[in-house]
Image 1 (cartoon, rainbow, N blue to C red):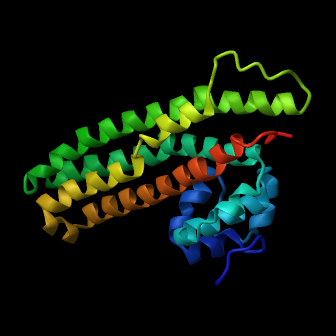
Image 2: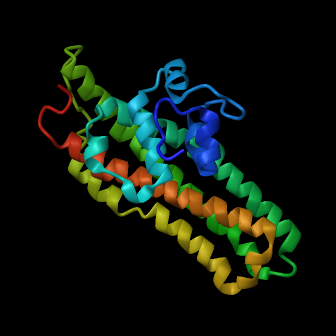
Amino acid sequence: MELITRASSLRDVLNHNPLLELVLDRFDLVYRNNDQTVEIACMDKCLNIDFFVEILRVFDHPEQFSVDTFSAFEVGVIMEYLEKTHEYYINKRTAEIEHSIELLIERYSDDYPRLVVLKPFFQVYKKELIEHITTEEEELFPYIREQIQAYSGAEVARNETGFSISKFLHRHEEDHLDTDLGEIRNLIIDGHPELMKVLAFRVLFTQLYAFESDLHIHERIEEEVLIPKLLRPGWGA
């Protein structure tokens, strides 16, 4: 399959690139042995088909990320993706990584003592990730909903909290959640490079690398697509 389209089956999407499971999971799509097309699956979940296809494509080829392509979608569509991704990160992705870390420590920490630092390092990382997400969920997204309602004529945009997009962006750019994951990986590899021969560690390494790439795409959508759209006059009209 050279190009993912709305006519691609979920089975073909996963066979083409198993890492696309990361995208399918956050939308709660049943994809194993499923010949349902992307278009039908999105219709069943009330998802924007074109946006979903573009997300699959950029996960398949991150280097082809296009700000112009994603900027063409409405703010509400972008926010829905970010919200589903937040839920996926907290409820599933981080839990899977924690489980892999615990298994690795249980089986191999006697031979590779530096492994024991993985758990506290990741716990600190998860705490920072949750704080980052909470700020967006409690400050940014309510502001966006308020503005969308105002532009739809439902009510006047009050912004009683004094929320500022520019101030939010400044704080947001100070977080480096994707690079922090790289540091966690390197911490172990530098101390025990021979661990790459251990299957359980390679599984964890792949999980951390995939999550790092996922976060990088997530942050680009927020900082290069969503925030610039919010800074434009009349974006919700």
